[in-house]
Image 1 (cartoon, rainbow, N blue to C red):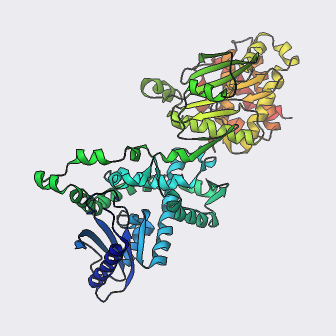
Image 2 (tube, rainbow, N blue to C red):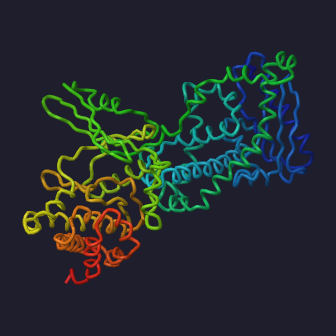
Length: 570
């Protein structure tokens, strides 16, 4: 049953009169009628919620039920100071403040309510960015966020704290989006404008990016702990203040069943909930930039689905999918023949490293290197670092597409050979290697590492296999799933050199180990790298790690050359 305009105006006046009666001589700052109640009810008995904000109100907080014009009305009367603390820092777990997240009608104090709403939404927006920063620490600098993300992220979090909120929101959705989305976004956009003016975000073409300063602050452990602990008071207070009007709504709309059973028929209520409430996915409004355009974090595409997307305007004569290796990850090669031209795409699936698979890796690097374990974290590092390096002129495979739910990254396949082949040839014929460019390639790699390090970036996994020499001699850097800002630069140097020694045999190849080390150090210093990072690579902290792969005599030859590295530059 729909309420008429005259009935609504009468009801509003009754609410105002009741609010003044409750406040007594105290000053009423604002009165708000919350519009979260369902409009699809047939009996017109949906419970209404009213917030009355009173200056210097005693007691600080009071809630009670009244029947006005045949409707149950829950009135929350709250002291202004308490209300503003709930807005600012959630002292009541946002039990009262969060009412302004949803549509409301201002019966008094419209400007005050909107000012407080903006303060609340600014804080919630920053919390959402902090959570993204914690979940995607490297990728956060590149993520492009639409304003809708904040709207649905805030809504979804509240539905998780109190699932029956989905019942109230059921008729406000069209598909998995709000019917009045544009109206609901207005206050979020106003809040974003203020945050941009404060230098916390930047906006470009309706996309939001977090500022570097805010990201660095948000990644401190105390922020993670604070965000985690916020859920406890939210759950406690929201349940305490929210369950009463929620249950009254259900009772009012199922009166007969309620009085027959004296309990809530949750199964019946569950069938009334719009299933789209559970399909809300805020991450579809967060995008990862690739060389081919931005891709939503929520975009779920498997390998065959990508092939169909890739050739949507063409008809390949043949498409093949082949596994091409991978121990800790699955790696596939897509080949497609189009107009007698072969296209190749490399696909990497990031598996979670857990249990026994992860234990040897942890044991091997204990005390020296910490590895990212989850597939989600490693995929984020791969995408973020690849884009970071590409934008700064480094040769890296172009990322064509990302499917975060499937943990898949699709990238250009680089034709050529990895640097381990150069090292093997150097081991067999060291004199020829000097003339055919093998050592020159190693020197270039050293220079590239130094330039990467100059941006504060470390690669994390610098085995020679992760350097590709294309058919035209261009050197590409690969595999960034362990990369990090402000990581251990010496690890990058040590892994490359000591793992290169893995391909050398003892005694005859000591000179080859020295030549490789000298070439790399020469290139690293020429690229602006610091000698101190090279010097540390000879310490037992690093040599013991790679003694598992490389013969002691080779490790000794490399470490000895590092020790004399000052002489190499003269």
